[in-house]
Length: 507
Image (cartoon, rainbow, N blue to C red; front, side, top):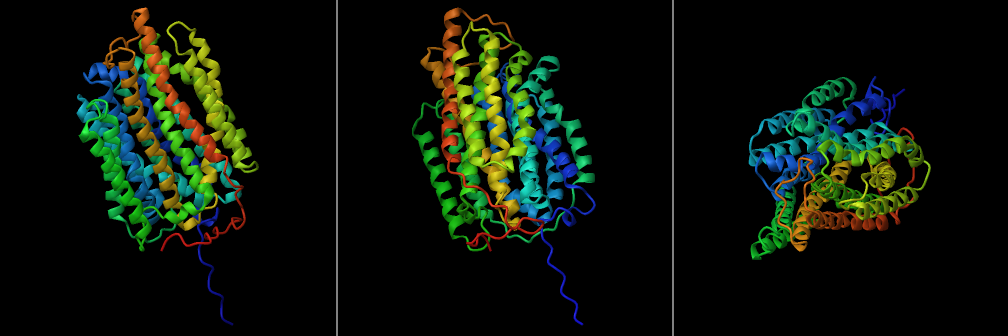
């Protein structure tokens, strides 16, 4: 009697794909590296005044320390998700972690702002190899009805890391110097490498064709757009700046057109956006990337320059936010698999808006610093209710064979938002300081002296508080986007591969 053919291997299983490795320890190991690279998106904000003073730079140059990292992180992440599908997410993750750790050593040893920016570019390349692998592995080793709990850990890691960055940075800058915000990555990277090598499973791979033209177009377009926005104020928005911005938009338009016409395997399978939840979740996470980056810089400068706080004490302003995010992570994770994502994320964005708007009213030269605690706590509640539910909603309906592409797109849009947020806040802070009759910030008064004359302190506070209205307004867009979430379907995920969408999205 003829034996039946073996069943095809699927990637939605939670037993075979991981071999004898349980999925939760693997996820914890991955989150160490993920936590480290996300900390580096915000840790520089609290060290901004110290770097300005030590390397004789200005605000715009130091913002490029963050922007260069984010840009080098955002552009390759579209293809590094595919590299994980092709060569195995574990292998790509370990290579990225190695690159990131070595680049951190370079950052700490550099003695000029130009070399620091160059080292941050390499750091960003390493980070771009790490992030999409974490989401792709979650999608492949957890079924959809348990993926919300897994994504809650991933989302809590992302949310807490972006808030802990300034706190940890303040402690390190005060105690050891700004270089140690990078040196601290070395032991963490080594531990993360060992744990990932032992605990993360090897998963089946897929053959991919790589869209190198798409990589070139997306990279060139993003660089031209971000460079034009960030340098516009310095060059008085002259014709060259506007040419760069318009050219960047045109190149990005050509990128989208090429993705639609590429019949082989586009870098961004536009068919994924037929899933309404995936599209809206990408809008929401772009807003989060934009706002988290753009709010931290003016808040930290206000705390150190106007209120005379040390880097550590100024970073402690964010502690209520981080504590609320951590405390609510488990609760939100449980709700994510049971409650409509629209309710959770809309509540989260409402809290983010209220908390940050409230904070702008207490950013004055003489209000007690304790008045920052309530708005920061409200902000932390909102943070907890956005990261995990939004991430789970984005990936819930994706077919398993497109896990790498989907996670790459999701993380790319978050990083694009962060890049634009860093560029936009630099422009706005310069513009608001000029509107208040103040010169561009050069790092003076950043050591905690608090010696600004009353009139100058008031003007500086007004400039920084007005700048924070930019990320506050962005949260409105996120709130409107998540109102249109649909309830995800869990059908087809009980230990089997997810069904493909009705319309083909690749190949």
